[in-house]
Image (cartoon, rainbow, N blue to C red; front, side, top):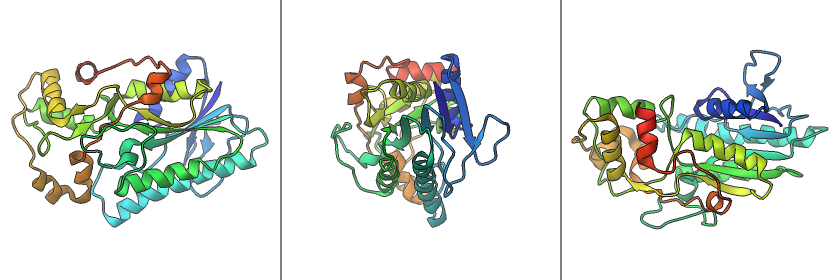
Length: 288
């Protein structure tokens, strides 16, 4: 298997590269500034060279963490739409195009779900992240003559990147607490399983279209807070009121306060074997 990965140097991309290499796959990283002969250039707006690859895992995009200024929102949207468009053009131009595109997305597609459970068959929600995901996926679906999987990733748990890199030190200092009411649902996933699901999707011919990369059981923010505190052996007694989060974080506060009660129906039907099936075990692993 010859697998191209955009965003190979990122949090999820690094783990996907490691797991693919462990399987004996030939990994071809894409980068804006290729460092060696194995790497290929990836510049949003220019057709990517995907010729001769068996599959592409597309993970590149502007991080969503940070204040959502107008400029930041534009970078989040454009990096995903233009980057994916570059791959679509590359597929169309290739003499020997890949058979599979696993294109990143996010459970932000569903918007604020409240207490309602959603799965891959559910419609899009509303809000900025939903708009981004719909535009992002819409570009990926333009690929012809290849199987397309839309990897809708949840809240990723891992010690080497993502939000947990910032959250764990706060809890270790004894300053953690629930966000807002704590009743909002969180659909989490260990980084090993995001990468694992991506490679599973590459190999599994039956998987196409949306694929929710989340654990089977979502948790409330209050339960998540308790589990993080338990993992680091500290109390969590400093809640962050919703109005303060909105005051300091602006529109990005919706990421922390909205519910995401998402079920991985496709992974369950396909009998994907999770490395970490629940939040407590995942947090104990990353807090070591």
